[in-house]
Image 1 (cartoon, rainbow, N blue to C red):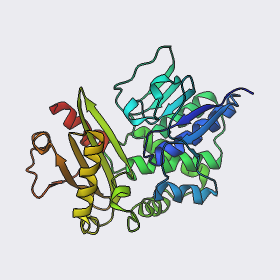
Image 2 (cartoon, rainbow, N blue to C red; image 1 turned 30 degrees about the horizontal axis):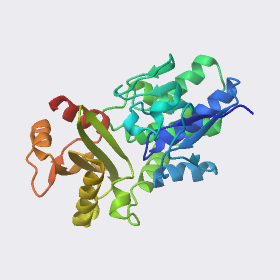
Image 3 (spheres, rainbow, N blue to C red; image 1 turned 90 degrees about the vertical axis):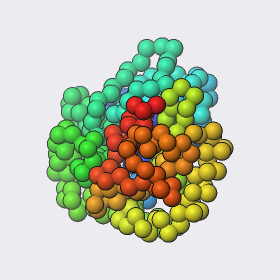
Length: 307
């Protein structure tokens, strides 16, 4: 039996990573490629679980590493630091992504689709259209959920006209009111009450690097920043432990208010770089970032430019 090609998004997967992996597998099947399988590199967050429960489907299988020579397809990421353990020795057949390209190298040619959209699922939507495949309700819900998540219901500066147009067309197929469904989905992801501090900082966390300098940017969404800050001391302990274990120079936790579109940042480690990047003074390990909701566009690249 031919070995399955694994499809997965980044570690600590968000809704786009999970949904786009599942959609990629569906698209592969419609293209006649039967031996692909969506998997995940971490736990499913509550927002994503809302989507899976809405559709009545199971989450993809959890894996932590890939063996040498394993054929894989990457979605919603390309940086090896954000991918599966052992990715350097895997055979990457293709990438579908909407992030910067960094720390990425393969020994053989591959299919690579990268567009500066707000969501990977928007690229997959265009693939469906380009290839002439019918979009059914299941994949429509998966794709529109990913777009709503990544663009914060079109409020994020990463959102493009292509994301909005795709979501509107998908909503008609799925017979879903975007605002009602979208708010319910986003609110489901803001329930942080039963997370430990260690789990909280890993709900949606990514590593970035510039040479030997490594920094982590984690993000949680909430309807009330103060509720999250009630456990600030324990959260900072978890962040410090993470930095020691992973050799990080800096850790930034974005606590993003999805109602007012602002973020409170907890910053540990190299606070001087953060202060230079955002022209902010870090006081009590915190800095308020007005209008900042996107790690991809408003945080990580600003820090990288300073480095």
